[in-house]
Image 1 (tube, each protein chain N blue to C red):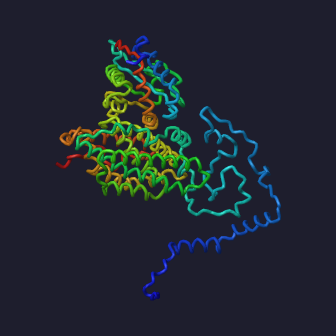
Image 2 (image 1 turned 180 degrees about the vertical axis):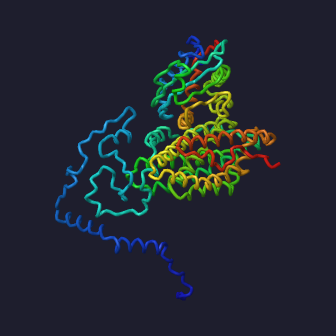
Image 3 (image 1 turned 60 degrees about the vertical axis):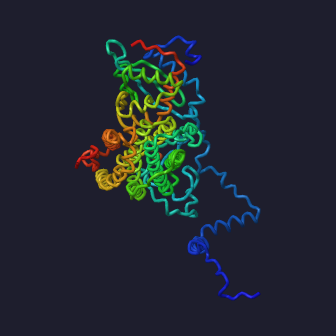
Length: 393
Length: 159
Ligand SMILES: [Fe+2]
Ligand SMILES: [Fe+2]
């Protein structure tokens, strides 16, 4: 049987032609160092010749005995060892060679990862970051097993829909709260390993939050409406120009707001299941807020051009606060909250009074957190200090 | 009422002995604390209108790692040195503890620590700065379970 050429299926195009070609060109043509290393290694292996250079300790910080503290061996414990705990003010190692290892003599043969762009310690360090890392590991919980899911019970329709809508909002929010640290985690060089470790726990926390709210929604009804107001607020966080600015917007303002919502959620929960969910989540969120406040404090305190840095932050906040406000004014957030606070759709007006109270409390807490970090936003805050519900009526 | 409560003389609330008993229960249940994780803070629980004269009493619990390592009744001035204080009337604390007892260790929905403190009344959270008040949130489940353990105690309210 013959087949005409025009009836044949075309050969599949290369799936990732451009990307693969670029990678091949880089490693076959552009980079020479790895090929030289490989040739040297192969030659030594063929000769059956040992190097044993890795046993030389002349340049090493060798012979140390890190002592665990009562809770085990923490980063704080090993950082007491001279030469291991000294974080550079400015990172100069842009590969994977660990801080404290013998690495200087190999520098010229090692790759440089151009994506490691957060090089200033004061763009990421926080005094409490090691404590928060240990705490995050110790206080982790499991959204599959630690919530009494078998006690989930259906609520009256208005309360169930309000709960599901709140869960939809929170599921949406938790994604960016994970994507933001993920984006920057990859930009941070290895010398700041403690911060990278903490951000990894934040990622895990946010995965768990996304998981628990999705499960809660689907356990009784399902997800309801995503909202443009949420999306713009989240995009503004993800696209913040620097790590400190984004951390401010996410951890201090955004997660401060989410912490208030979790606390309100625990208060207005109509079942023990929901209370447990919110209580567990608010603990994690308070850790993220604490990192944000201390990171901001460290940034401002350590900045060589302090006044200019503060002014730049104000300029960023003038936009950031307003974009975050698009989420906090979304009917898809404040209305379900008001229904839950009031106790039903019939009582939504009373619920709005509750929101008025929570709003003022939240803004005050936000301004106090800024102040605690050395950033006086009180006279510059663009978010109304009082909930303007019905102000124009 | 639990078997323990039946066999133990009732403890007066508020008293140092009462908070020491709660600390003892927490420390006896280390496996649960290890599940919940570290709790590192100094908390003061203040009871206003604690007697007929309207006195306020302050109880300071020092939590470290998985344990309550110290329990003291302190002065108002000493109380301010704690990371945070949770303050409410005897009637508020009593209603909460009775709810926990009635629920065999689980308070009614409107009797959790966060419910009572979220709006600043009837329990009020006081801290020198937001980082300190965030400790109350960071350890909220542990603090809730610290009080939930009171269902194992026979409680007397003398105020
Ligand atoms: Fe979260
Ligand atoms: Fe978070």
